[in-house]
Amino acid sequence: MRFNIFKKEKTSIFAPVNGEILSLSEVPDPVFSQKMMGEGIAMIPEEGKVFSPVKGSVILIAETKHAIGIRAVDGTEILIHVGLETVSLNGEGFTIAVNVGDKVTTGQLLMEMDLDTIKKRAKSIITPIVITNSNENGKQYRFSQEKKGIKGETAIITEA
Image (tube, rainbow, N blue to C red; front, top):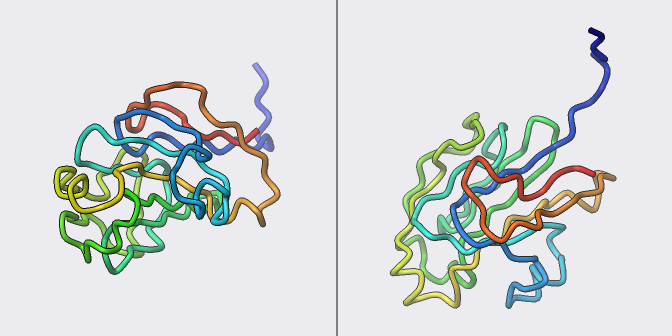
């Protein structure tokens, strides 16, 4: 048996929530649907927990707790933005389980959220998952054709 120790493993980004998978173009917000922040995909969470989609480090926690940024071990930067217009909640309904600088593993709990509060007070619970450095890293990505994702199991974005 021969192994190629120089073969680079391709990046896989796993579902951070259980729920429906949507194309980023279906997100009713032009910042996301027009990919102004980068390539990505979106999900509609079924429950109030968000998990790490990759092994890496927490690089951003929005002051209003509605978004978390992670840098994967290969340098891919991923933003998980829970809901649309959730910044206006000023952190209400969100409980963060990690800190900036923490190392995380795929499937590790990042935050809990009160979906009822978000549904009542924000525009939507649609959660974009965006590769914020996709325009600079020179990588090409494939997006899942699955309709439903399982946190930590369904690869929603893979390096082509």
